[in-house]
Amino acid sequence: MRGEILRSALHLFAANGFGGTSLHAIAADAGCSKASLIYHFSTKEAILTELLTPAGEGLAALDARLDALPPEERVAAAVTGYVELALRYRREVKILFEATPTMICNPALGDIPAMGERLVVAMSGGSRDPGRIVGAHMVLGAVFVTCAGEVDVPDEVLRDELIAGALRTLDHRAG
Image (cartoon, rainbow, N blue to C red; front, side):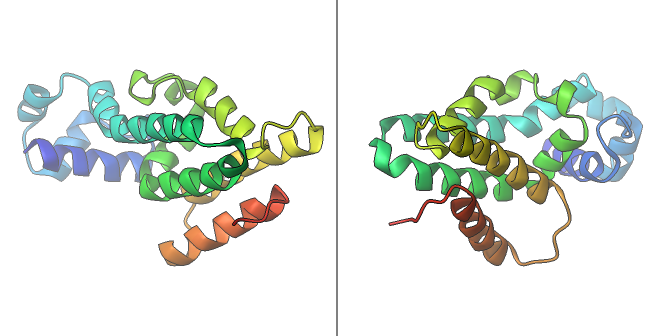
């Protein structure tokens, strides 16, 4: 039942927004009573935290991988890793996008602002050049917005195009 509740909540949060989804709607979609849902999750925020935890762990793992790489490998690895995470967690990204100010502080995501800044440093190649820094911020935002939207392109094609576009934006040639 716990898995059904999570699947229903993810679907409804992505479709209606976190604020636009009630516990009653999640229970009805999952095929259980509200009391059964509350047995598994005391609040809507607890459901959201469990849904966002894997994405937060993935971002933390990417952050750690980038830190271990030599500087010349970080740009391509940061872009590829970020695009893959954004695609893997598309519905979670959509939920975050719709309520960024309140969602970004969810403890399941870790320290998003600090990890985002480290991604910008990795994507800019550690450069202090304003153009490279702005380009890295553009990539961070564009991938986030694109993955939050409904782009009618197969995920594998979208992945390749996002990576190629990001690397062009950063004026970086992979490999």
